[in-house]
Each structure stands twice: as structure tokens, then as C-alpha cells.
Length: 266
Image (cartoon, one colour):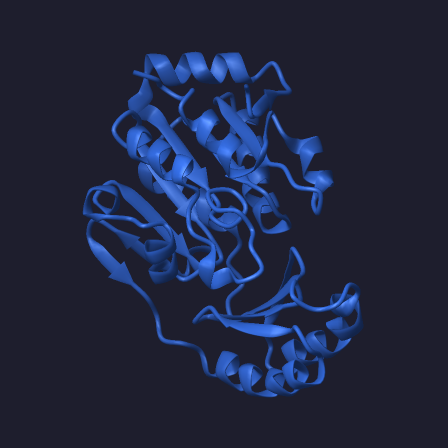
């Protein structure tokens, strides 16, 4: 049974271009909600087994596969169960592009002082609201409310925003989470830089949340210049508005895995 739905007339030409010139294809993917299911404990958000197998096949078929995520690269390596074969062909861009892991090694800047200070202030918030917990993302701190009572995110949002303002940190909203970031790099900035670096013509971005929208915009601009590009959304009840952008709508990570196998198949 198909776990994805094609929603535009761009899909056929994209697949034809990928089949004719797979070496010119870039597939960029988010991690949480796209390659892994969203779970209450983010430290247990391991890659969906079907998605890992699909990645293993895809890296041998096309020009480049990249993971662009808010997570640090070492977390992606662990949760993605990425062995040396996969790491030798993947580009992992963590913290929206502030960190990089590829065949040439790992590039990770130091944790900013502002993030450490914000972490200390947010501890009081955690103590005051049962179920709220913090996630250390090196260049960011994420305030999670998925384990808390419904409506907690709305109740604490103003306080979290105030902490971010005091330390000149950006706020990135997500599914029951507010992330305070020290840098102002978006996934769109990172995808555009990668396109310029690799000079690939046919691209797709696969994502599931608001942080992926700037990268979707890059795909839209790329195809406005006459190239093939697809926006692929891993659907969720929490972000139904993203489905309106989708050329391909997938039923979670299992659907993403099935879709990946359609790109430049054997």
C-alpha cells in the first residue's frame, strides 16, 4: 500500500530527470519527523529502519544526499545509526548548518556563552512546570513540553521569549517545543549554500515542520530558474498547513522511505 501521494505535475519530470542524470541530483532531508518518528523523549528518536535502509540504497544512486537538521551532528550520527559506509557518502549539516559532518571529518564550533546562560535561567522554568524538559543542542537549547499537560507551551512561551531576548538568542518554534538558537542560519541558507557548493541541478527537500519552510522556499526559487525541484512533506496532524506546499505528501518516515526508493531506482 502506497505511503505517499503525488500532488503536483512536477513529480513525473523530476523522476525522469533523476533517472536520466542521477549524478546531478541532491536529496536533502530533515531528521526528526522525516527520517525518525517524533517521540516524547528526543534522545530516543532513532531513525525509522525503513528510512535507514532507503538511505543506504539512495547514496549509491545519486549525486548527493544531505541531512539538514536542528540537531547536533553527533546526535544525528548516533540516532541515525550511521556506519562508516553511510558517513562516507552523506553530508550532515547540524544546528541548521552551523555544524558539519562528512567524509572529511567533523566541524563543530564551541558552545556560545549565551546558550549556557540561557540554559541556567530556564532550569527554574523546568522546576515550575512538571513535564517540561530541556534538550542540550550545543548551539541551542530546546524547551520541550510534549510530556507536560496540554497548553503548557502557550503558558510558558512569554517567559521563554524573554530569556531569549535577554541573551540575544533567536526563537525557533516546533512541535511542542521552543528552541533558543545562538546563530541566525536557516535551513534555507544552508540548502542554498550546499547547492552552490555542489552545483547540482535537480533537488528535493524533505521536511515536516516550520523550520523546513525556508528550505522549501529555496526549492521553489530553484525551479523558478528552470530546474527540477520537489517539495516533499512528511505529514503530521500538528503541521497540516505544510501539506499545502507539498508536491509529494508522505505518511511519516515510513512514507518518506518509500518515496526515496522511487528516486533513481535500480
